[in-house]
Length: 262
Length: 262
Image 1 (cartoon, one colour):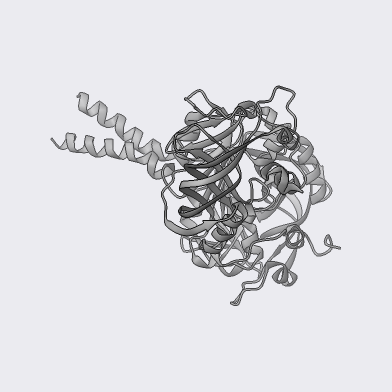
Image 2 (spheres, chains in turn brown, orange; image 1 turned 60 degrees about the vertical axis):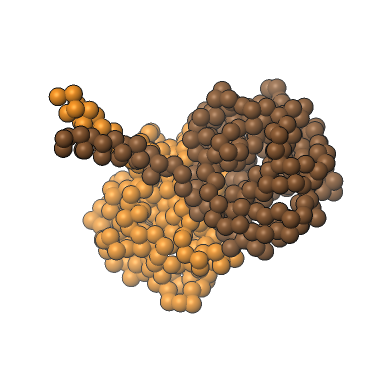
């Protein structure tokens, strides 16, 4: 009888330990670094299983830069350059992704946003400080302009070149979810500093990297993240990349809409 | 009988799980970010226990900027501005520290080094790529010039100002250990990009942040680290810091010797 109680206790301990040590918490998981993606490292270094073990919410891209990744409610969605959204399975691979277990700590009312810059500006004013990582989720009806990037063959070209050939989707007004991430200024050398938004429609047929959006009467669910787990690709090819130098101009070029760049 | 086997199996699982999930591995643990230290955040946000749970080897500083921290073989040592090295206990607190469980993957022969720049240059040429984090350990006889920083009272001044009042120790030639860390270029916004060396003498009486060193016939034990765990201070004061802007000039000012700055 005592053995059975101990057995149960130990079973609970064994099952609970991985969660305590590295599961659901206030941590952003980042697979690879943005400079590697900018340099054209589109190798699928991280599997879907590895990514979903670290979060159920986030964004990224796929092996060979095959479209935009949206991770929502524990499912990985692909928005390829064709615009035809696909649900990805365990075989999906990624060169760059950022995920967290989304557990909102606060809800910010944003009465309306005229455009993406307006949304970002309002959020900056409303967030409890800009020195942490934040995962942000907006559900509802909005106007969205999104983009995706075309799948690349080797030899891989730098991201700033590929983005010139991006597909832009004027999605009009529709129901859906903005999946956002905000990185602090001190993350500028390894990720996008500031906001990074991907979109997925409610019917899971449209989406992409958000270039612009507007809405009225939505609220923002915010998960404040106080730690970062960065994992680098294992492949020796990663060691061969030249990742020196300031890439802030390149980041701006690949993140913004073609018009905003002027 | 079967229950006892299961019991043993589960006990092993329960004990092993924390190690698998976040214990000894190829991970650098970083407490807070360098821009916060530069901005004068000297609050003791991280306890000795929390730091030693994440590594047995590394460097940092103490609450109120009270000297240089050397973590070696699982012990935290303090080199205050007085130069009198002290072994710290569980009550020690830190605003900034970087540690790893030191498990060398390779050994690099460095026949001799004329100065610190020479050592860094030789290591850059010998390391298997500069896109990962490295913990580096050199044991032996060397000439060392080190420094420490004086304990600060509130209101805390920026680190670049405090460093002007640093104590410089010409330690001469002595037996000891160089405790080093190399961060890749993409970590420049949150840590020292390149090498960062602290020293502790073999008799544990001298040490500090290394400004210069030279030696002949030593080898370098290297632990290649492919992930980073960054943890931010919990305190609301951290959220109030202005951490925007480029701090690379400040980093150079606080890391190098007074002469090297010219």
